[in-house]
Amino acid sequence: MNAIVALLHFCEVHGPCVVYCTQAIHSNSPSVNENENCNASPPISILQSKHPAALMQQQASSISTAPSLASLRKNSSSSLNHIAASASVSPPTTAAQAATSTAPSTTCAACTAQLPLINNGTSITEAKRLVTTDDDDPTIQYIGTSKCPQQPHLYKAVRLACVRSLTAEFCQGRDGPVLFGDDENGHVMSYMFKLRDAQARGEARFYALMMLMTDRVYLVSCWPLLVGAFRSMALNLQERANIVFQREKESMRQITHRRAPITSQDQFYRRRSHTALRSLVDLLGIKKVGTLQSIETAAKLARKIVSDAEKKNEAGRGHILTTMDESVSEEFRGFPFGIMEYYSDKCTPNGNLLLFMSDLQMSARNMHRHMDKVAFTVTSLQDYNPGWHNQSTPVQQPRFTLFGSIERVPESKAELAMNCFTKTHEEARPWKSFHDFHFYEFQVKGIYYVGGFGGLNYIGWIPVDLYRAAGLRGLVEQ
Image 1 (cartoon, rainbow, N blue to C red):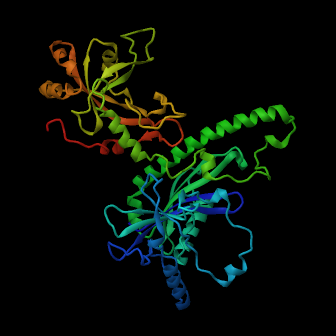
Image 2: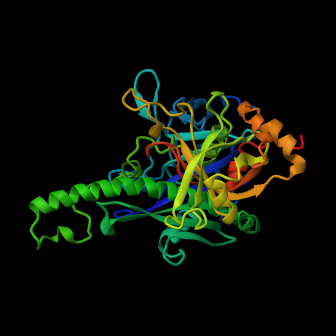
Image 3: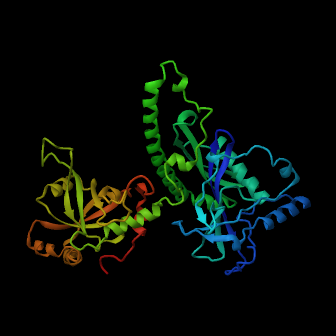
């Protein structure tokens, strides 16, 4: 897919700007000599100027700005298997640029991405770009930089899309996706969102995630996938920013209460002239944005925790949550009711849970009245996250709640279900002689995941399709 993906921000000083941009680079052969420059084709073929001089300048720009593979260095600290480049990519130098080299900087911390630091043996410097290789096609690399593409025709398209995304093209309420564009400058799917900032004007900063491509039909067909992915990233960033915002507001409230009189102008929403604009890293309260746990990683980890069999005596335990029915307790009807329950995921496809329950217990009596409103909580049995201050506690480890419905397993599959269930819970085999015990399948319809403390771990909803695909196995009949 030929496209450009970018993170945009409306800076209070410099206006609309591109914080980070990723484009696909197609090499001519699967194996590229490290001593040769990568002959990269533009990721999207926007209509170029027909003027000969302009075409020559664009061709020279594309050659001079192609990333040098010899200058790329492996970034071992990146969880995304990125390659950090130690050499900078310089745009074509012109007389106009040279004349304005002493002009004030057009960027600040708020509109510049902070890339990982790399150690080249003599000093520690910030990486200039990140490179991700395509596992399916070795001829494709994805180059990520904290600036717009260097090719003039791509720079124009991205810059125009950036300005329109943050100023004119947005949905009602400003938060959400919008589609716009034309055949000359490409078609854009932009998702705008805002992050709370106690030091910003209006206590909010506007960002947007954007995808630019020339194929409008293909972009529209990818709409559900892109909107879901962009919304998930935006919600994750907003949750982290809200934690920092609430902490800073409480601190500012205490200071204002002690020092500022009632008539002070500090109560008005404005940015203080002496306050420096802050980067995305500062707004989120983390050191590296690039090492945040992705929603895909969280989905895989959730499936691993559900099927965690490394601790045989403890695996397959969770808490089933039901709504108290009036036939069980008139006094507490409508209250949530939770209790520990055995489960197994080795018999049902796509992460559904197999339960072996007595119809006499309270949770079973509750769920029989509300079969479509049942939840199940699962907690990790081992340390997946590093300890804090040399101490590891359960609240630092992943846990999540599965939302779904309950369906009774047919008697024709009871023996098959028993053979699967007792692989995890051998002690349950004698229960089949009790007339009130039956097998039930918990069908997952939603997942809310807490990866640990807010820092680098994902917290939020996981799409069901990601959860199911993360550990797809055979059906019960196999």
